[in-house]
Amino acid sequence: MHEIHELVAALFSKDADYAYESLGQLEALSASSNAVYGHFDDFLEMLDNENSYVRTRGFIMIVSNARWDAYCRIDENIERILRILRDPKPVVARQCIKRAPDLARCKPNLRAKLLGTLEQLLDTSYPESMQSLVHKDVSLAINRINSLP
Image (cartoon, rainbow, N blue to C red; front, side):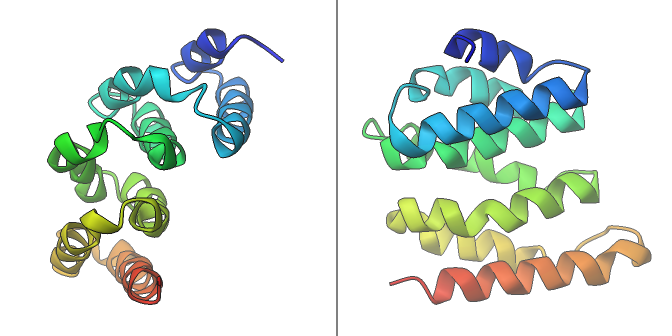
């Protein structure tokens, strides 16, 4: 396994296979320890990257590390983080919408904020061909959040 900083750097790679392999390794590490949480600022910066794949990976890593957010960095940056749910690229928005319930599970204090953001997404300006898919994803995410204990 590579060093964590090398795996994080790989998230910016244009080689999608390499980047997603690194993403998978980082997610696995994040599931069992807080070793990756120290790169939170990197993940936050990724949300503003011009590359849509990098933005998506950043959101996934933020969600994957939410359980370790003892310093409430997610809470402090929630507006910036949730902007990706309205990403101009519907594929990015859809992938992140599907991960929103995982964030809500780890951050119960942010559930109302997440639900409000998701409900706003029901009025999207995506092309008609994508609207029904986004609506379905949003509805599923809302239902998953509402069913959390």
